[in-house]
Length: 98
Image (tube, rainbow, N blue to C red):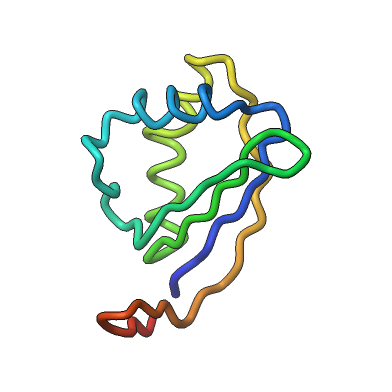
């Protein structure tokens, strides 16, 4: 089953978020297993992040192999995300059922 990931980084600036994305070295593409990624500023400062992943294993591999080491290298505290089972993902072009 797919899983969605939501986290708020109250101390992460837009610039730090950009450095994380650059540090992941994804060349502007989603990593294997990621359905989508979105992020933006929190009204109180900081950054929110929302992802959808094809499976918990795909998310776990990405966090372990790429995200956690990149954030540690940049001195950014890892999030305590909310993980949600995800059954449907809709776009204007198609629907994806997991």
